[in-house]
Image (cartoon, rainbow, N blue to C red; front, top):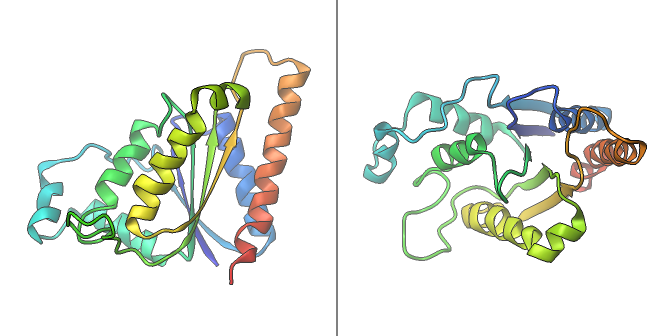
Length: 203
């Protein structure tokens, strides 16, 4: 299958970048075709412009948005890979969603929340978090991400098969102790395993 990965991190050599590499390795080992939308390296413009409001007047969208939509339409399934900042997406990825998942393409502009327009696709969200799973559970961060990503974005637009995987305690430090290194190594092994198996179970 053709898997689109939308990657959002300003540093390609970050731990989030290593998760991307491990995930891609697993995908390729299973024979999938991979296309990576590296938003920072590609210079995607995440800020909504006046031209983006064409979506509300049945007018053509800007060329860069149309290119991203065409790339999305080519994929059989897709993944988002990013760090969790302030309980949410990085601004770059949030801007990509705001501009690319536009009215008239991803959803119908109606008062009815069942206005999805995208064909059903399997989606995977891989997030890197500095905090522990216990901290996320204490403050309900996991629930916030579930609602924001799965319900508020994906399911609203028609993507109803979404898996969210959070790699906790993945923070970067100048010097990491053995325990931290082990946690990061386990995360990378998990990312590779998910790449090998997750999309291979599609029917």
